[in-house]
Amino acid sequence: MSTNQNATAAQNSPPYFHVLAKPTGAVCNLDCKYCFFLSKEMLYPGSRFRMADELLETYIRQTIEAQRSSEITIAWQGGEPTLMGLDFFRRSIELEQKYARPGQTIQNTLQTNGTKLDDEWCEFFREHKFLIGLSLDGTREMNDAYRVDKSGAGTFDRVVSAARLMQKHNVDFNVLTTVHAANADHPLELYRFLRDELGTKFIQFIPIVERTTPELINIANKGWGEKLKDRPLYVQAGNQVTDRSVKSEQWGRFLIAIFDEWVRRDVGTVYVQMFDAALASWVGAPAAMCIFSETCGTAVSLEHNGDVYSCDHYVEPGYLLGNILQTPLVQLVGLEKQVKFGDDKRDTLPRYCRECEVRFACHGECPKNRFIQTPDGEPGLNYLCAGYKAFFKHIDHPMKMMAELLRRGHFADEAMAILEGERAVWKARTGRNNSCPCGSGRKFKKCHGEMCSKTDPARPVTSSATSVDTENRP
Image 1 (cartoon, rainbow, N blue to C red):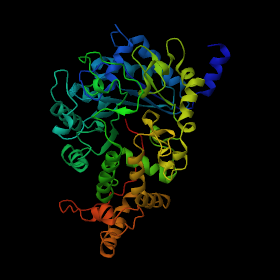
Image 2: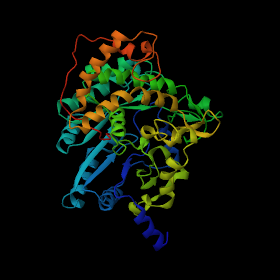
Image 3: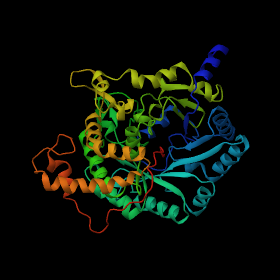
Image 4: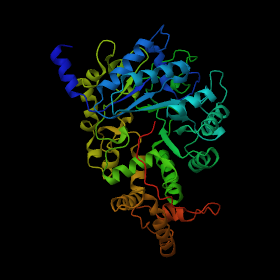
């Protein structure tokens, strides 16, 4: 780039941006069947897939220097980042301390499958206040359906052991659960396992949507691991999905079932990222998740060799921005190409979405999932649209209630008692086949009437007097 182009790119850079660093690239000790990122090894044939010390220092220094914010996040993912070994992360902490400016606070996050964690790792995480994301897809049967190691063995016991270790050492962690064909029809069993048996209070649900073409669908259905013969590089192309992928309406039912359980008894004590993000939309706060923001482009992906891509979901040749060893990170994030990538999230929405009543909460969700047509044939509709629309319409009434409570200086969990009283009145006054009073348009028996029939005598509704946290956790 010319000097003028460099200056323009730096000026275009947002005041704060997020970098998801992958020190081992796509290399992982597991072989999860839906993990299309395993195929990204093909972008770097012959690589050792280990971030060099020089690059580590460059990354830490550039990230800290580029941010015009007092709070900075250093985020690690993979592949499996713990394969780098603990000394790598000790060095990272030393570099943060070296380059941090007065008044800056640095938060470290790391997403892991947990299978390499031990007491030493957990002591390090606690000492340096790491926020850990632990991947677990539910019960043994749900998790081990797709989350397996290189020998094909399930990982459930090892991941649960990691959770217990982190609890023992008071490590701050949340659980990231992908939703797919093996667990999507069992939302309450899954949620109650995470909440009651595992004992986690912070949960993320991520829908598995493996996009592919008619030519590759049979291969894609076999998985993306290195053992697959003729494995293709996963790219965002095609209008078909694998058998493992969650269906749109199924995704909506999954969210609704868990929300109804959560809003009845867990507001303020269990934090579900999807629900916190929705509440942010109803309050009118900035989007808590990039997928629900009007535009994007401020969350880039850093590979083990310094290559920067537009997004973690677009690690493919057409979205390579450059390398931080040749071009400063702040300039790459501000490139016209990257600004357009982010603005296209808004500018390419089909009319069906622009006129949608829940656009304020959804904004078309992630562009990677926009590969089907609208009812009138316009391209660019999100594959998960039907599910999201059902979910957002279903939660409108309680979300408005919680938003109003927060505006008045109250706590969101006070809505539980109010809603319980409403449901008692509705149950007494509404016939099963009448329209639900919540305004969803569904029959009462298929909406809040179904919710009224659920009882849980083992645990009464509580009020924790805790305000809702809308932080976007890893």
